[in-house]
Amino acid sequence: MKAIERRIADLWFTEYQTPNLRLGLRIEDVLLNKQSKYQHILVVDTKQYGRVLVLDGAIQLTEKDEFCYHEMMAHLVLCAHPEPKKVLVIGGGDGGVVREVLKHDTVESVTLVDIDEEVIRASKTFFPTVSCALDDERVKIMPMDALVFVKEHHDEFDIAIIDSTDPVDFASGLFEQSFFEDVHAALTESGMMVAQTESPFAEPELLRDAVLGLRNTFERAFLAWGSVPTYPTGLWTYAVGSKKFDPRIQRRSAPTGLKYYSDTMHSLAFELPPFVKEIVNGGNLKEAKGN
Amino acid sequence: MKAIERRIADLWFTEYQTPNLRLGLRIEDVLLNKQSKYQHILVVDTKQYGRVLVLDGAIQLTEKDEFCYHEMMAHLVLCAHPEPKKVLVIGGGDGGVVREVLKHDTVESVTLVDIDEEVIRASKTFFPTVSCALDDERVKIMPMDALVFVKEHHDEFDIAIIDSTDPVDFASGLFEQSFFEDVHAALTESGMMVAQTESPFAEPELLRDAVLGLRNTFERAFLAWGSVPTYPTGLWTYAVGSKKFDPRIQRRSAPTGLKYYSDTMHSLAFELPPFVKEIVNGGNLKEAKGN
View 1 (spheres, each protein chain N blue to C red):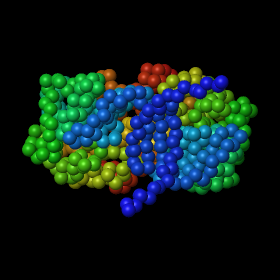
View 2: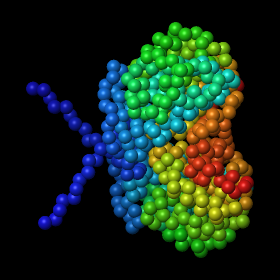
View 3: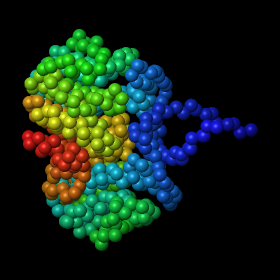
View 4: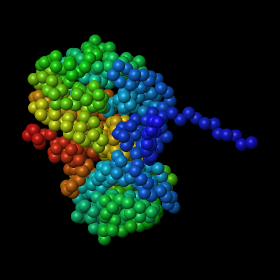
């Protein structure tokens, strides 16, 4: 008698990056799978990218490639500012951006505003290498709606980092011009902000609208780009608004030990491929702003 | 009586980019699905990326993002060479690289060596905007094994472009040092070559080995990188070997109308993120070559 081959449990997480595009990761285990007050939180161990945090079905970070995103979100603006002391991080409850921010000695305080405390808790439990700086004494955690927070603060922060989820539901306001105006008011006179603005391949209209909103609000506005393998299309953008300084110029060296960002990567991140320039209105923002 | 909801045909193509990572594209139709003498050829229409060519299960090109890859493969070396006249393209039976090569007025002839004539035929039938230059009178098509072809040619080509499939089966020899040595001999004294060398996230060992092979063979060897959304991890690399000229220096301007490559993108493509430098042996190749 011929033996039947032993079968294996074929377990996958699939992200529908768009209705017509999906990314699949083979998983070894599901560590957390719950609905918070605001969103669905999933933590899985994958073969390809290590441990992965998923919010409302969208990958937020993986252990293997989170450095690409978190380093760019933090250091593009922190290295462009001559002396960043007070930093505001919106979203980013996982702590990855805060970890990078605190690599800068000048930073005296980081205020983290994330609407969902459950994300912070999940990160502390399952992502110790990402959340490691959240208990630093310079960090103040505010579990509240960022739209409300920024309205209540004026002329206070040197840097604002908008580490939002995709612009659906409660996060959609974080991509609108009225929010950028409130952030502008919350920044000091030499303040800068950066926001993640999705992929030019998957969300070109969203990217263009966000950039236009920033351009209408800030004295200077530029787009930067970089690679993030587990975000849709792998090509990601970062929109930078600045009240005074040209953010393309690096004023302080990169912290040591980084894996994606470097002194060289700073300036080249602002040089856009022609098709991305085209999306943000026929030319990089510098042309539109005349600087 | 409650009506049952009408169901739709949910049709997908899935690429297993690694055993633990897969990319799924919703498809509208399958246009070609056949086994050639050398490989399986699939042509599908997708919602996300337009028409897609798949060889042995791996996406070779999509209508929406093929410009990222084909422009980099052609113009990095063609714009670095002062006067490229005779060009050799290995693989690339779809014609995308040839189309870009012929945007350079200096080019007098392009020899395309692809082992599989069925790919050329499929591209002419289903990808007219990609294969459009294959009937140009400057193009000579050689349907044969490139490993044999390069051994029979010496001091003949100014440029060699290795547009191979992934290094499995008949294509695996195209990533080995002995092949690079034959290409070196087939080039003129100022010749340059470029090879696609996969993703540093998905295939770091393969990338490092290919780069080492090139470094051992050519007087100068450098790695460049860029975005290609539908290739695994979206971050792709291009290894350039040169017998005389530093390929990081652009000697001729980019052709007009490009979407990814530009004069600015030329030099920044050779600036690697720290983690990629680390993979290719603790520093970009320039350090190892002393130039």
